[in-house]
Length: 118
Image (cartoon, rainbow, N blue to C red):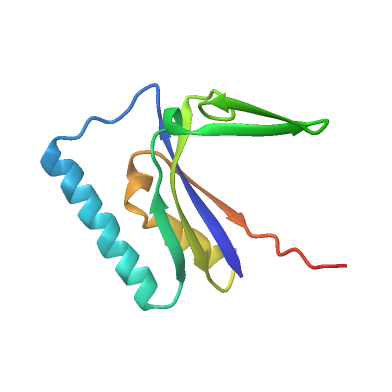
């Protein structure tokens, strides 16, 4: 079963890391990526640019509307994700709990909904 592990960070109280600490965190993420990939559970993992870099697109009545910035203004920003394939929710939680950024923010684990053509 596939799960999306969405990493959220508090944008109102961001952690400030030294260049060395940030490099160490990136190295820790990359090492964890390799670990989860080597045991066959990682589909893809990526970090995201800040919410301010996003563009929101809506289509209403055939008209396209574009807004700079995130879809919603919240104190928590979606900063990265892991798409994993595991046996069940318990295993997904185990994977999510070891994501290095979970120490600084939150990781939401959500099952993927497979769409089937009618």
